[in-house]
Image: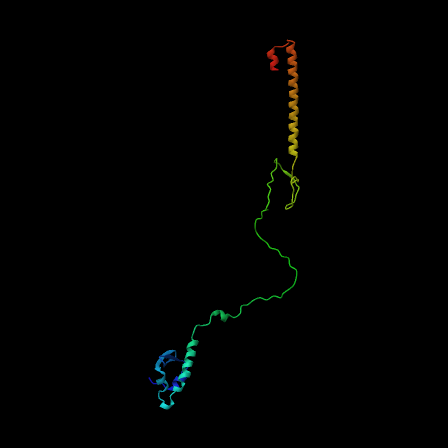
Length: 192
């Protein structure tokens, strides 16, 4: 296949391959491979001997190396994105209240277990949450009415028991007097 120099330069898609110091041209016409020829035969085709392009061998080799090196990897997508968008705010000087909100469970380093001596309804709370208390301080007051009524009931039972004891003592003394007078038998006196 004979290709003229004009056809080579009109066709923009020419790839130059250097192998064993022998240049080869691969021409693409309409994205299809047309010919592979040596550079010497391609450039000197239908030209007189003194008009060959042998003086262009080194510049064409340099051009081929530049084209081949440009066919490397594509640049990464991150460089194509450019700078990231950021929000900008004006700096203000003002006092702030620092606080944090946490969900959690707190436990005091020192704890005391408080137990009442008696059970009952709480009538009054004598401290506030988080306040410090000392040994002997009043914490709670239990409703005293049920205990007061129980005390009155027990006092009445005590008086009744004293009255029964007094009556029994009186009967025992009477029985002893009657026995000393031989008014009753010894068995009857012991039963009193």
